[in-house]
Amino acid sequence: MTILNRRCVVLHSGGLDSLLSLVIMKNLGFEAIPLFIKTPFYDKDINSIKEQLEPFGVELTIKEDFKGYMSMLKNPRFGYGKNLNPCIDCKIFFYKKAKELMEEAQASFVVTGEVLGQRPMSQRSYTILRTLEKQSGLSDLVLRPLSAQCLPETKMEQESIVDREKLYCIQGRARKIQLELAQNLGIENFESPAGGCLLTDVQFSARLEEAMNRKEEFHNPKAIELLRIGRHFRIDGFKFVVSRNEKETKELLENFDLLPIVMCLNEPGAVGVFLKEPHMDTIIKGASIVKRYSRKAKNLVFKGSREFIIDIKPMRGEEVNKYRIGGINA
Ligand code: SF4
Image 1 (cartoon, rainbow, N blue to C red):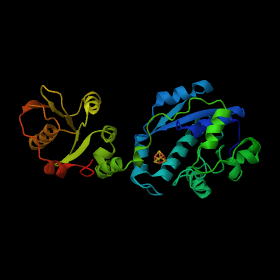
Image 2: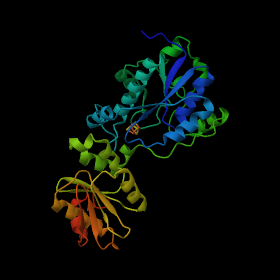
Image 3: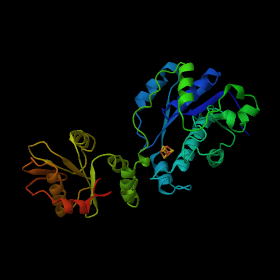
Image 4: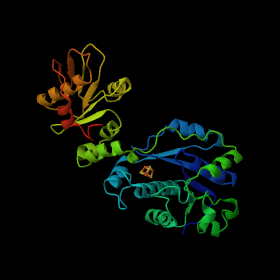
């Protein structure tokens, strides 16, 4: 049996709703511990989130569990949304991490910025919210300050640890009430740090799905990171990624510099990286694709376990499309 105290873990995504919930709890006199769960797909700038929290004198805790998240993603008990977003299982995963911190920090309940009816999958109804609690072992121990008054009482309200009258009854997708509340609570920096969940993106989901049954790629953080950028190809079973612009060329050269690479010898142009070093035939096909996107280039160079110059013609469009992952517009 949980004995309630005045310390809580607040699941913080960097968005306005979770920030409001944190400030509401602080103003009610609770020690609120913000927790950000880092996943390979939820692309938020952590420094902006930390900055956003500075005025409230709280320190952000970050938890990350790549392996755990990927196995949930492979087999989500409650299925996927429109793309490869397993929102219900993902929320259960977040709740479980919050529970872990709750126990570590000797807090007694969890707070979220969830708003009833705001999202189609994970916040659709009270039944779904109850499912999240039950599946994570947090039944009655999750307080949603923004919607609490239109939800059944939680243990914290029943035991008068939290005054229900000081909470809210916000429902639906409109943001007007939250914006007014932010103003009333003196919250100024509530711009959500850029980036969202890549699992809701159709093109990204197509790439991820293609990698899903390749164990060595699906469980490799570098391979997953690589899914975010470039044009993606599968050549003779080898993953090959080619930059689409200068920014991506720089990113591939700086962040993936340990991978085997095909690049222009003397002129600026695209670069292509293999996830692992392929046979000569495959390198040549990859080089021909790079040449297609580097019209000014004369010769290319391959840098891997060995280094050599390649003189090759650009691959024709129809052939390039044969190797492309995620359709011809990808
Ligand atoms: S949108 Fe992404 S981060 Fe949000 S619940 Fe769904 S899968 Fe998780």
